Image (cartoon, rainbow, N blue to C red; front, side, top):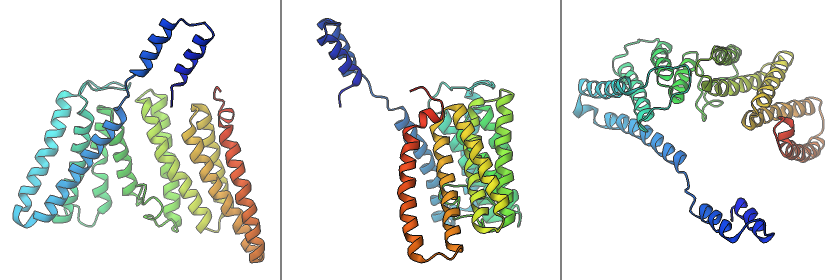
Length: 329
């Protein structure tokens, strides 16, 4: 597909508003334009760090009898310490603003050190049960060092690991695959705990934004909180017989999500807010139809009409999302 700017230049040349020499210069610029591989290379590097850490775990698991526990512990500990010492020596001074380190490998070495620390702690707990039966304590141990490294060296990935560790300590599984399946959201205590945690997480992110400490971390806090908040409110709506509690909560989260999306002109937060609201609305409609003893055929026809109309509404919403978010056309 030809570049739209190049087509405009050709049109201007056809109208004699550009000379052929000027058109040749512009064409050469666009034909020889370099393609950025920044995000592709970063993705590969993050994947490489993750696979390396996983490979160490598999190596330990398959050769534990021949290597020995003390040797494994010493190897992982030294490798972890080497990563952290490198970051402490080579890292730039702390600042409240965003920091870009001169070395392209700095972020990945820090991430590798944190992953190795988790591997080491897990191994010690599995082999020697250093925390006994207090598994929540084991998940809390990485929180302080991870928060320190995240803010000291400006690393969003390590910040996310710290938040995940806190969530794990209160019984939440927050990996993408296990956010719903890995949690017992039929438990009222877990639902309320998750909602409180989401609110505290969002509040902490907002507070740090207001005091001008790593403002670019706000997205990480909000993104982490919004999914837990919506899933918890929906779980309460699905499993608890308290619609007058969880429906207002869902509406509050929807209002907050839309307000933030509008303020930041964020299509991402607008999209996830619409999706979660749609799930809740669909549940309420069909739950009402089923509990009101409608016939199966009636529910089926209403469902067909509902999904067609909702698809049309979705298309209309996202065709006009710029207007809804007050974004320039």
